[in-house]
Image (cartoon, rainbow, N blue to C red; front, top):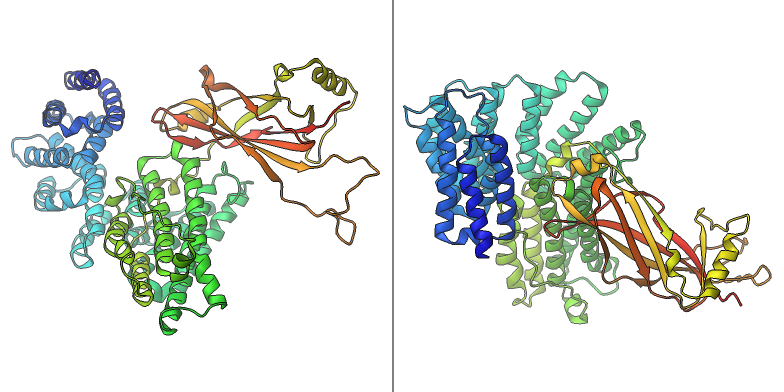
Length: 632
């Protein structure tokens, strides 16, 4: 540990004594990665002072320059500034206070004011309330700037938006006119779109809808751009209506969201890709986020109606009624919805920024909270022993800075934990109603990747039989005799059927290559490929005269049966990524003793340098069919 800390100190010193922004950027990324592994580094006061001193020396040297065009030191230091501010509130406070103090000095150059705006926007993304306490100094800085450029206006808005969304409506209303007046000064459409993207990320849907409806929609040059921006405007309008009116305007909200979902699916169909089913489609991410959001709202409204009926029935629903069965299935539905959010997180997390991953984790925690709250509320689930409460469920770090994350954290500590003490079903139901109303009116953060339609490239893979897996001469002779025939036996899907002996080990090789676009779009570098295998039982082996009629309906057609899982690997198989994005991964399945036809399915994943595991969209041959029978 001391060696690691010494290396981190040396990197910090190197960064502070150079004027090359490329070296500064590389050092900042390395330090951010190191802090992710060693969170105890900033807990020591000496390390915190050393890191801040070196960074501030570098910032001061660049702020004294007269040429403001080449000032990109804050952009180069952004990884370490964001990570250090997230881990240490002391670092964030000293960073923004020193930057504002230096910028408010009359002797400082305009570069110092630009650096102060950049640092305030970075700290505001991590600690909005800390930036809110600095609003008087920020107001003085805005007065000194006078007529800012578009670049400076963006940083001003980025600093104000997180402050406005975490405050009460009475306090935040004073900040929104400042944002609206700043937006009116901007003429660049791309700058306006950037503000809309950031507003969606923080839940400022009123500002997003205003910009989209009154500024961007009127300047569309193509029909596809118009439909895309209109769908975003409908989403912003629906979320803003839901935040202002709550459940009383739920029908209008769902109508707008469904219309936006249909428009996005139509845009995906025009591109020749189905955005609702293909992970590598252009609009797959947007369609899935909207679909899950609509389902979540519908589930909350259904649960709310059932809770209202429970209160009218004296605290519980009669046994055997449809309403009671619906309420009993609500936790399962929220559990399925949470799994869908986690699926999106695993597919897109490798290629997305921290805000996108944080938003998806917040949506996942939102569904898990509703599942736990409903199961605590319904007394029948507690009595029958089918309760699935996870008391040690921890809210993801960093998500509490979002409005929804902060609300969920308060509800878990103030409403959910006391339910374990209270035995009153009617009281618990009332608490659940209040929690649903609070969640409905709280702004839900949308991932920034919602505005990125660049798809993830497919990885072409192939799976083949390892000849070395043949352990006996008899098995080798049996397989060679079957492969020497002129024709190759295939199943209904066109997969080649491999012959195997009962009890013989099965070894396969998975090979492929990652496209360059996939490697370039990965935000976190990965160095390992992992594969998880599942063996399914497809059916028995029959001769032509011994056909089983048990799976045939009255019309003589075969009834499809759900394949039975024979085995799943507990530990995934792993291999190191080769140069050029190539990989070759040997896998071995457990021997199968019973005769029959089986199918091996492979799911490919990757493991990044932070030990996070992510799904990989694949194409090609990723399953193999083998027939187990005795050749003698």
